[in-house]
Length: 455
Image 1 (tube, rainbow, N blue to C red):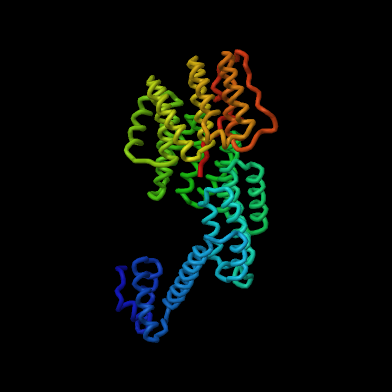
Image 2 (tube, one colour):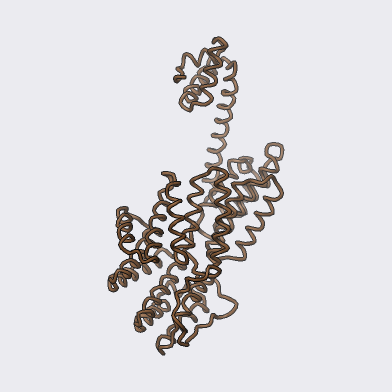
């Protein structure tokens, strides 16, 4: 059927159309976005005239009313949140208890979205408190217990992700367990279960538990596939590829090839990451001409922030692999400086250790020692680092000065830095000074390199 004009819609909505016309028009309007938009205007006009919509499209009129009420509630929630931004946590809690708009579905959803987008650890903890207070205060006569369970589970999942990014492993796991408990109490929500598995997988990956992480992300991918959410399937495949890029680059590359066609145009950031990961995998596979060609495509966009730093790091790796060692060394130095400027402490530590390993493998212990000195001497890094971390760098510096550093210790140290960059381990990691057989630490999937943090 062709699109419907205003006069036809007015006849149907006012009850002046015959049954055949009414049924055909109604069937079309319910499935046509363009005609629904026109119908919204007609309904508004009839209401101004005091005419009540009739026939099957009366339901559409009711839907329009609900849409307007929902849009108003969402706008009021945004306005209230804007007014609360400068208040203390206690004052915010009091407003949530006092104002009904702060205990609405729109406000609860807003807080969960804010929590998901939040990058600051303390801010996320405060948002989680507010979200829980809002959700638990929702009127049980208007909102089901199942909905509140889902909202609470979603808040705990996002809080777990924030704790993961801050390397608060025990607290992240506690939040994930809380979310699991909430999901068990209500009807299973496959989308929330998938999000839970996604954050669980990334948490395992950040701690170097590569096989467990990939298995968990595979389960997550399966849930998104069942939902036919192909964009999220693509995202999950990229997350798994990020984990596997170094320990199993061939498999990582295969995942990326499957992921890229699934991404929607809105996922431009993910598409950029996927291309960079493809280059990274190809470098590990020593397919350097192809890696160089693909990396050239990555240079066509003016990236900023963390993506730019990651691109430059991969570029430095490519230059080094192609034999441009001096140029690579300069770019590695810029990468570390950018890490520090952006307060990417974990990335800075892992990049310093990577460059340290490059110099050790090349037998340039003077440059390896200079890396240790930079790790100890950078003011912002020295201020951030805990004493055990500084002790590790001092031990490394002592080992290279005595020409007693073993290649095999680097994989263990990388895992240590990835897991304990924020808080010390139970004991200082051992730094072997024997002439161990060289190893890259890429063979075992049980414990392996920890990837950079993903959102």
